[in-house]
Length: 356
Picture (cartoon, rainbow, N blue to C red):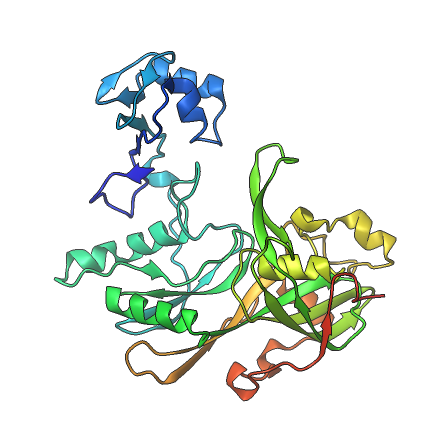
């Protein structure tokens, strides 16, 4: 899929273009349905009948056959100016080359699927649109890593192409350290432990709409390692400091499921109110069961792309996570910097070997 080149990235895209690559001919509605997994065939047929789908610049019928190198353009539904979020993302650190923001839970980092707006990227483009118009220097925020929609906390971006290239090199050379806070079901057996389990991505067909989730797979999965340390325990739940050594999709969520201690609220990996109850766990009376997986991007340490000096940023948890941490007497400000201890020692664990 290609979005309109040169468009204003502070606004939702007006259309998306697709190029037909396959040799065999196929009906337009069926071909497009395979590429728009979030839309049913009947909805696609309605879009075509309303003239919101163009084949090589012209309207077509659902039964029209597409050929190799044909161009299909879909007119996307867009909201009004008042539909766009007005809040600015909290900036944790900024200089002419890098930007670290506090991403709220529930926000995607970039447009994907049927979500074209309300993401970190277009929010930042809106924040810099006015300064850009008053300056010759164009600031275009570029992601250095990603967070799941439900995960809150710090997110690193760059403001120049060269800074992003340099930071991507640091990520590839394992010069970037990350730490997350997670509230999990149950109490691990060891105070410090690690999970070394391969991870592969797959489509979860059990959901109403197909959803891509990673899973543990020691045969076909990529090698993955995460180190964990217990910060607090209470009433059958635990707060963990999680340090991913590799950077796979959903890595911490997968490895905590492997450990037998899924993150509270992470229904995609088997955690429910019932499973917490069955293990004798309970939340404080004043704290409701979470509506999202309680995972927070807490610390990040990396060489600065220009100065090459160690740079460490932390993001204190807020919202639904803060009162639970307070109840368990966890003070994030007392957690040592990542630079103070590059290793979290402990016991290497295989699937099913952790927990009561």
